[in-house]
Length: 307
Ligand code: SF4
Image 1 (cartoon, rainbow, N blue to C red):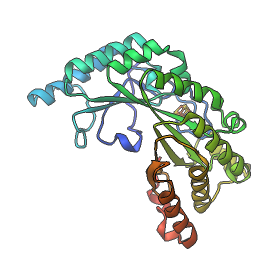
Image 2 (image 1 turned 30 degrees about the vertical axis):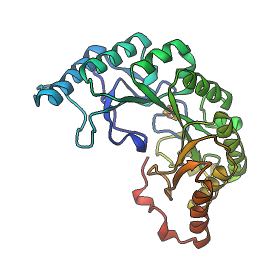
Image 3 (image 1 turned 90 degrees about the vertical axis):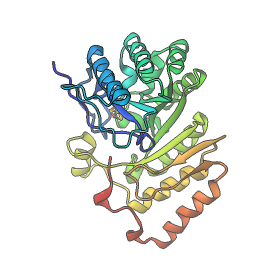
């Protein structure tokens, strides 16, 4: 079966990366809010990946175009970072993943950091020694979705794990020296579940104490079960200003040692960022200002929100 090259869906901070697909879809395709819901995981042949790396290296080193090999757009690439696609590239079989990273390092000697999305299940499947090998091969950061600290909510949205799995997975990656960036989704509990979602999310984020944390705002994707629930009137979306209330409360309540927190993702109505706890006050003041004014025109307009 021909490998379908996935669309580029990336964390905001990976905009300077080269996007190298290892898989397409997500191995955990049951989250009712996610565009990958029901997707079929495709594992790309390593031979095909090597050809793409060869083509990229030929272009970088000699300016040569290799005909017949598709590569990702290079206009924003800094030549130093690679982001492995897709929804959880860490699901790629370990021996092949290791070989791919070795090949990347060999062909792109200026490479500084490799990144990927990973589910907590992917991380827990690997032992610390395996993760350490990947770290030595420059896998520097994994992006993982906690989504919510509420186990009840995680179960309701089909996440297939509880918050304890995320805590354990994060510890394992940290032990191997891999940075963790944890994502939470504002509005995931809807109107009725908002309070518990926020309370539990702040608590679990504090326990994880990641190096990076990011907030997304729930965007209903047509065709997903959550979108259907909303259409049927069984799920009530919070308002844009309520999403900022959630964001503010999470930042207020979470205790971090040294975490770069950001809501720069295009799904959010207001972008804030700062190092916590050092810049906590400033970030909260920024949100309080927007919340006090309640001016819809100060928010990111609906049409320019993205996934
Ligand atoms: S939210 Fe993450 S784990 Fe769930 S289906 Fe989407 S990509 Fe996969």
